[in-house]
Amino acid sequence: SQTIHQWPATLVQPVGSPLSLECTVEGTSNPNLYWYRQAAGRGLQLLFYSVGIGQISSEVPQNLSASRPQDRQFILSSKKLLLSDSGFYLCAWSPATYEQYFGPGTRLTVT
Amino acid sequence: DQQVKQNSPSLSVQEGRISILNCDYTNSMFDYFLWYKKYPAEGPTFLISISSIKDKNEDGRFTVFLNKSAKHLSLHIVPSQPGDSAVYFCAASANRDDKIIFGKGTRLHILP
Image: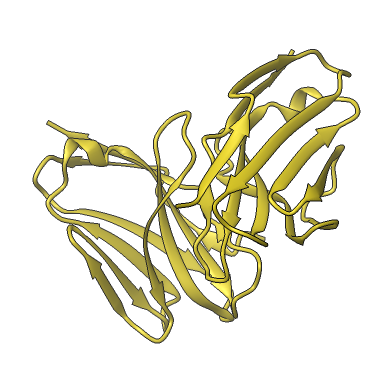
């Protein structure tokens, strides 16, 4: 069966510091991968999605970036965090169907 | 522009009664609709889906209804149980696009 991992589970970072969140998927190959952010009152906002290694599409211009160095690894990064980057970050994967399956999430607090 | 709208931020329903969560969409190209359930501090879990060629899909206590002419879908939970208390997200996708568009969610409270 497929499983999706995210770490860390929680993170507190000062403004201006860098960020690296990692997501890995097991039990499947060539998945579509997604990064979402859930901010208070704003639902699930798609940040990035990837259909293959090195292929990243950005949905929201901001100071975040994503990379996919391996087939089942998706990384969300920032060089300098802003207060507005606080939120709950979710990684998801999908096979060749519509459904997406989400990881446990990372709670990021920027202070 | 919000393509998937859940206009009720919250809903309270008595245990054992029917919960009805509503969702409206604006993009007529959407051809697949999904509902996700989310507990606090956890990732959303897939609940049920419906293709635009159908108007109803049922899975146990959960039924999704689709009204294409009104661009409206609803999720019915019968009977409602305490464990159903969560945030429910409506989502939609177009032509097997790589993206799913989510609504803002509706928080469901099941009252004892």
